[in-house]
Image (cartoon, rainbow, N blue to C red; front, side, top):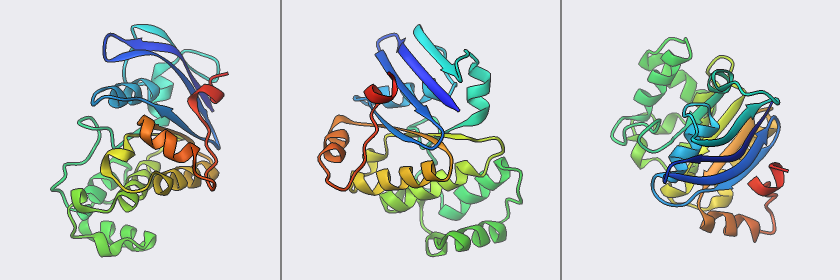
Length: 206
């Protein structure tokens, strides 16, 4: 699966932007300001129409297919969990959306399987950045038909960009198409890290 955004725009919220992401690859696209990362994430995951430009999946315009096959992860206001909800509560809700038993027991077993059972009673807003991102990506990947993951503004939680970028690459290696929307500071940090392989929007949109 390959999704291409070509010169997409949405009023003042999103100036013309191009990027692409595909199966087996993690791509970083830069979006600054408070609103822009979420708007770009909504567009890239098929959840918002654009005013200009085009969004295609495997060469065709099909926003419904993108929406079904791509999960929007941790986008501010839109898909981020409430900060005071416990990890168990977040997991239970996502298990329900994935068609699984949403009980606290099922949530506890799922967390144990990931080695994150120690976070069960912690408010999701208090979870360390890397653990939060792994948790939310794993939950999104549970949903049927999900082949792509659009992770929005992981850098707003703090921590080292290399930590969440490494996690994004792990999901790409598992066969997902991963797009990460982050700020310029994160891009610079990753681009200058000697241990980081960075696929950028400009490269992938060619």
